[in-house]
Amino acid sequence: MAFQQGLSGLDASASQLNTIGNNIANASTVGFKSSNTQFSDLIASAFSSASSAPVGIGTQISRVSQSFTQGNIQSTGNSLDMAINGQGFFRMNNNGNITFTRNGQFQLDKNGFLVNASGSQVTGYPATANGTIVAATPTPIQIPTANLAPTPTSQGTVGVNLDSSSTVPTTTPFNPTDPTTFNNSTSMTVYDSLGNSHIATLYFVLKPPPATASWDTYLTVDGTSVPAVVPPASPTPIGTLGFNSSGALVSPPAAPPLQLGQIAVSLPFTNGATTPQAITLGFANSTQYGSPFSVNQLAQDGYTSGQLSGFSTSTTGIIQGNYSNGQSKNLGQVALANFADPQGLQSQGNNQWVETFNSGSALVGAPGSGNLGAIQSGAVEGSNVNLTSQLVDMITAQRNYQANAQTIKTEDQITQTLINLR
Image (cartoon, rainbow, N blue to C red; front, top):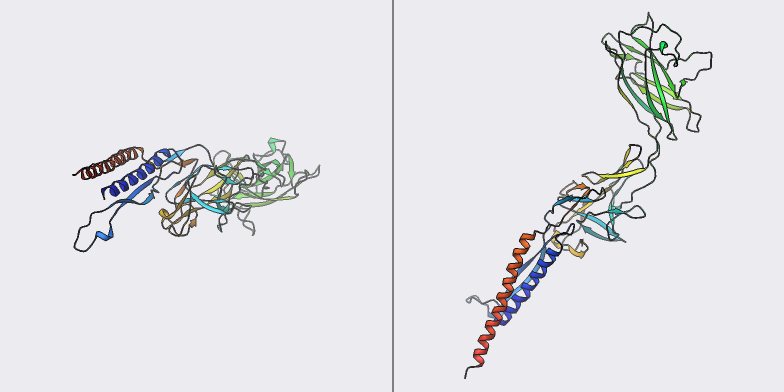
């Protein structure tokens, strides 16, 4: 019987060495998960009974299990690379065949799909034209590379402090080319429907008595007065800013749909853009204090067209495109999947697994939700192989192999002794 026991030990030790060798070979494979050989003993049922202590007839491989512990996160500098920090797998689509992987080395193919080295497409949730993520059935993520369309300016925010000690200009009427006809001015860039930029300049003129703490506000766009005037007529203000004794803005008052401090204007364009273009200027953050004129806030919501210049991915898997005009937009969201029993997954090679009856169905969701891990952009998850542990296990497996071989050798010597009996 020792022959059978030794042979089973040789087979088991050889299988263990194969597993260890495979682990060591993949010590640098991104997303690789190490395996562990599990043994169980063999008992001849014919020899067992309630009153006996049967001798086993050897060992066998009960299973080769994989360890899905976290590997080290390694920075790559590639914005499309992704690492999962926590549980979960990337969900891949290869011509309708769904696989799962921890290898986040991704790139864009010629059609703009996010793929791995073997061409499998990363699946997730698409984004609408305005960047809203639609969480539905995961589909292959395709990154649109078209230019970002321009957005015309519709809102402007102006926060200035007008010096309460200012004096009324001595020269009248207002003339944007004559600095003696106004107290202060500031400029901002606005955009038309074609994405062309225009310089909008605001002028502030302190009104003479009996008006108190009141400032006429004038506007020019590219040097042309708004509203337009026909010489010899003089420009007219777009509105008047009034302040109380504490220096807070009190007019223009709220007049729905306009709020306190808002002034609606129409910009005429002659370059083929939509005209007139309606813009609401808000001065609610403006003040009149006893300090020099200053501009504390100047913003608008328009922008010109932009080309896609790069990507970034959030911890929740949202891929955001960065454009040459300084804007950003959500382009899609990577989905992750997890399983009730990851040990039940079947390996397909190339760091890919498929679900089985034992693993249970994939539980798909956004990164960071439920028990799914977070995404780290510009990084990958290294192999979780512990080389020191594997080398020690290799020595142990080698000794076991030698010991089992010695068992067979000893049994052979015993058998030879029996044969040589006279």
